Length: 144
Image (cartoon, rainbow, N blue to C red; front, side, top):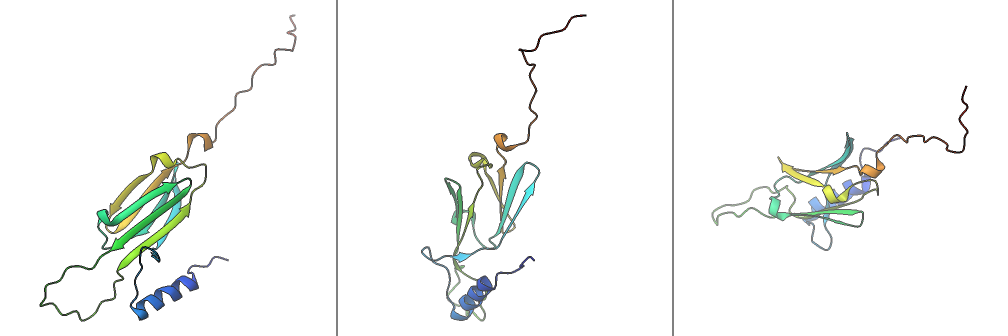
């Protein structure tokens, strides 16, 4: 059976909304993610609406991919009175353990319409390949 939602993540999200807390660098909030294979690459898509590219940090150490982002409040004029604020602010983070079969040296990152998309190619050594069968040199050739 597949669990579509993580009840503890939902509880954390609701608590953050009710308490008005946001993620900090020492305790970041999680960010939604999809991961799938597309051809010879794995794709990770992370939702980061309202985050500028300069506020996104992506790094790989050994096989641990870490994405951190910060959604900062929009600067408002002194005459603006906030009536409702539901969009979460603060720091968001996600860590993904990558398999040894992925080429972490050639990760490509694109950011479009609030979605950060990472493409991680499968390493050449991990791709299936044919093995040629050599001729046994100990066999004697029979001539007829």
